[in-house]
Image 1 (cartoon, rainbow, N blue to C red):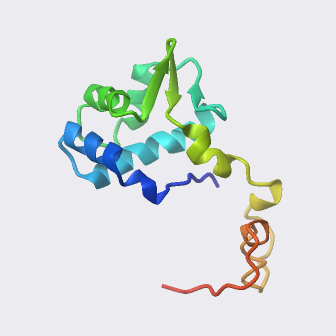
Image 2: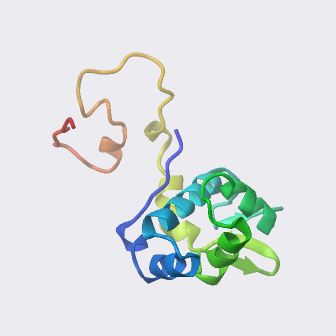
Length: 141
């Protein structure tokens, strides 16, 4: 299962700028970013470089994810600093800084979802050992 890391710092001036430029809510802007970042997991290298992609490819990623004009969304992703164009190549801005930890978890973090579940709540959460958790309580909704 793929996942991205979304830090509390994302709710700052860049997100506000993007929302104002698109005339949409911060929630919609964050949704756009999340879909872009999910796609980035399989399409960007560890530095955020997206090889053989152009603005149309970015628009295609977001197709059906927002009602906003896609060409405008892509333009705003660049002008608000979420995407960079470096010598004709598209980069997810600061990808290695913000997604580096998500990309570098050890193999035992990733589970296949097959086999039986262990009864211990800690054993059922493979990342607990990796991040050094020894005691915690799982809360049901």
